[in-house]
Image (tube, rainbow, N blue to C red; front, side, top):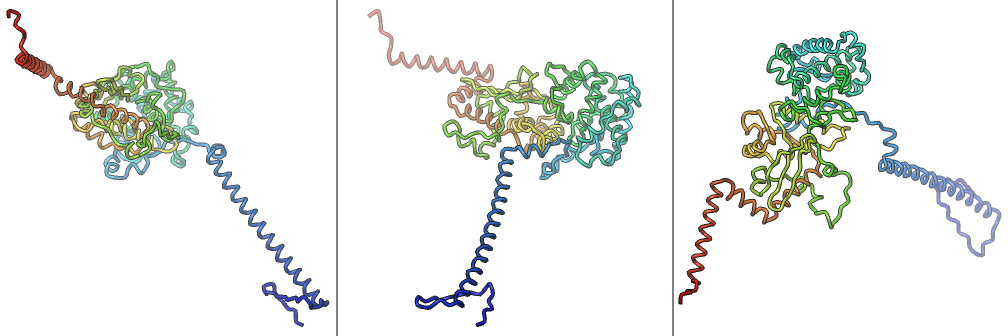
Length: 503
């Protein structure tokens, strides 16, 4: 009998009850049992291998998921390094982005490596940087060679820029560029803040038009130099207060249009990355109760929260303009304590509402400064509360027409030098705010709408805004009330005359 068999062949053995078991049958049964045991062990091995591999994958995924949720391994392995970023490309798209493209590019001077020697008309400013370096050398009593030796921030300053953007500069070249740019910026800040005769040099070398555009160029996002550069120069030039008063006067000139020294400290404990970041933190701040972020995981409570709190479209809509709020009994007021720079507050009283805003100056350079501060807030690795975007979102809601600008100007909240009020409306309209602090904006809008929905408050507001808004209207209202009252008295006594005592 031929017993050639393969492992894939099926074996069927029939054993009857009365069939005797022979030696051949015993050999056949043993062969079959051996084959089945081999296949059984092979199957068990494959199943065990697959189970082990599956557990390995699931375990790795689970641990990775826990690491992402807890943030332990991710925090330890990844160290965040902040850089002087470039303008996000998404801000340059769209109709408004194309129109605002010039607001992100320097017009007179290039600072830092991003736009260095990119245009021919920067050559005059490059020559002027050597003049400001000499002026700084004379004011500090240090020679230029000694400044190059003391001013050694190559490695720290390089880390502040995007990787690869400073590779074209050797250490000496980069160090000289940082020193010249820092002296140029500090010289301009000192001219504005101290109001000395040095501003004549600016007009002489750059002209009046170039001098007028220096402010916007200094606050461009891609035109920033590390603040560590300015910090060293400020300490050498102002050893008493490290330049605190100079920066204070310069920032107040931008905020209020006048050089004043306030009690608020400009330099905090944490060193800013660049001058734009420092000015942004000084420009405006929110109160402690309004600094909650909408993405901090607020728990939903059906008793306290409405559905609108979790509807992005309803929550993100704008509120009424200045003139519309005034018709509803909400009046504007300029804050008295400008040292805190808390610029958005609303108070609802029994018969009226009060919207408190901080005073701000608007100049031809304001739009570019606002857009670059927004671009800074949109960059990655910049922890912030979107204070500039939120402030501008509020102003875009308030300023819709020229009468809104007039009302803000009459209350001393908005001071502008753009010529016409329509230019201010146009400026706010052309500024895009892709993101803002939703919690702060939604809370403010909700409080205003709650006040406007109260009937008796709006009726009292209509009485004062429509019928008692001026002296002649008030007098006419009083005369009409007196006539109505006497008419009612005459009618009453005509129906019910007084009793005749004589009879």
